[in-house]
Image 1 (cartoon, rainbow, N blue to C red):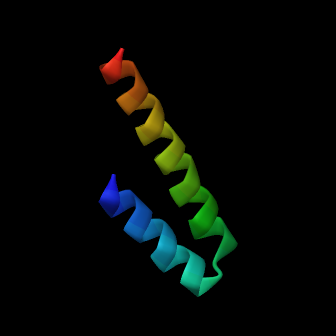
Image 2 (image 1 turned 30 degrees about the vertical axis):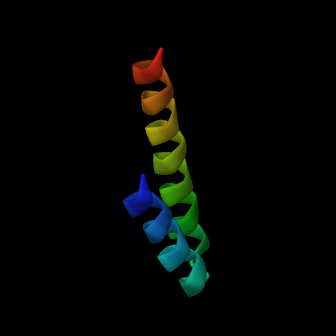
Length: 39
């Protein structure tokens, strides 16, 4: 999870909206997977 957060910070610093959106979508998918595993 820390790696995903780091990537989001890197993309955010570049102000590349497309990359930021793709990273955010991947982050949401990762969160959903973690929630499923914890259930």
